[in-house]
Image (cartoon, rainbow, N blue to C red; front, top):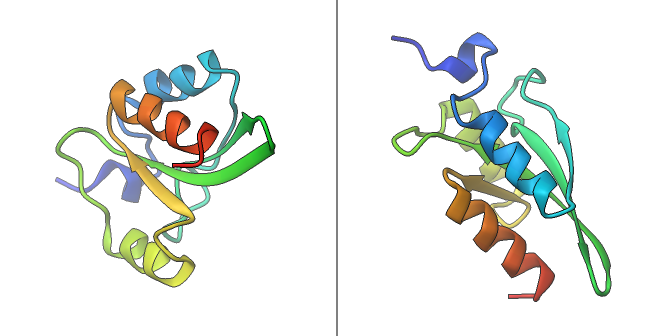
Length: 101
């Protein structure tokens, strides 16, 4: 079976995790149809110092990055992209960005 992302489909938890970011007053722009290994979302998190923007790849618990996603992460730097798989991952991501961890 082909990877859903390679078919232009979002992972099954995409809506749930996007909603979680939004519940924390984050702005989310869905980029799941861009292709070329580009991450699924651009997320803006408001912090005390202003805003932090990060590229976010949404994966299911057992999902793995495609070769094009691996190349994108390597070329852009792992620090600008993050993979989230669960509500706990989203919460931890927001916490790290808001508190500079």
